[in-house]
Structures are given as C-alpha cells and as structure tokens.
Length: 129
View 1 (tube, rainbow, N blue to C red):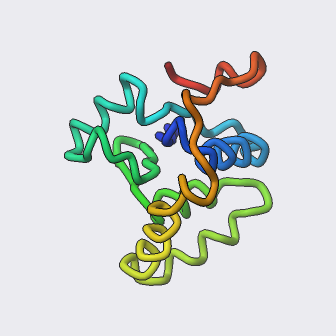
View 2: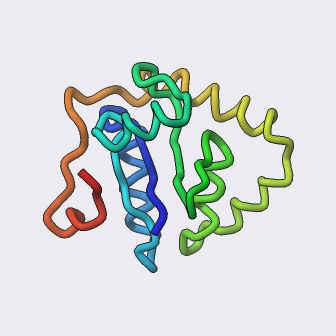
View 3: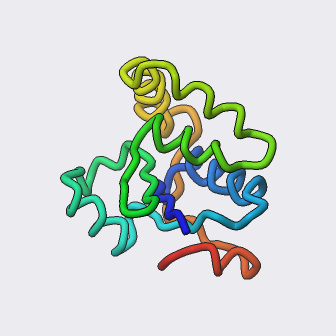
C-alpha cells in the first residue's frame, strides 16, 4: 500500500486526489493530508517544513518521493496514464522546475478551501486519518 500525502486545502490537490481515485483500479493508493497528524509527523521526520506545504509526497516501501518524482511514480500505476512515467527520463531539475511553477501558483490559479477534503462514505477507507 502506497500513501499519498497532499495539501488538504488546495483545490488543485483535491482535484488530483479525485483523479487518482478514479484511475486507481487496483486501489493501490491511500491518502493523508499534509495537515493531518500523520502528514505533519512524516514532514517533520523527513526534514520538510510543516507550514509551507508545497509538495506532494509518496511513501512507497519505506521510501519517500517528492515533487515531480512523486507525481510520476503515482501516474506509473494509474489506468490509462502510466505513459506519463516516461517523463522520468528527463533530469529531475527540469521536471521539478515545472512542478515548482505549478506548486507556487496553485492557490492563485485553482483556489484554496477553508478545510481539508472530506471523503465520501465510499472513499472513506482510502483515507488515513
């Protein structure tokens, strides 16, 4: 089971979680917001800011992936979207530059919610609280 840590108040991040849930036919992924107790603990233990939540994290087999690498590793197992993993051949500094541009502007472009995403009853088992 892989855990995706996402910014729970970011509309773009929440739309991404919805997209992943829709395309994760094997139910490989579980989700936790970066604002949650587990998210904050994971950030602290790995030297990330617990205030500036500007990355997606993927925890797989004890290894933590971030930014574009996390996004591509997630896409790798999504039905119909695994071809995106091919972009892993690009140097990380190039991929992360693009990722950073989106991350820095995500609130301005997509907006921000007042609270974290609340899963539907059907989705509840996919979220770690």
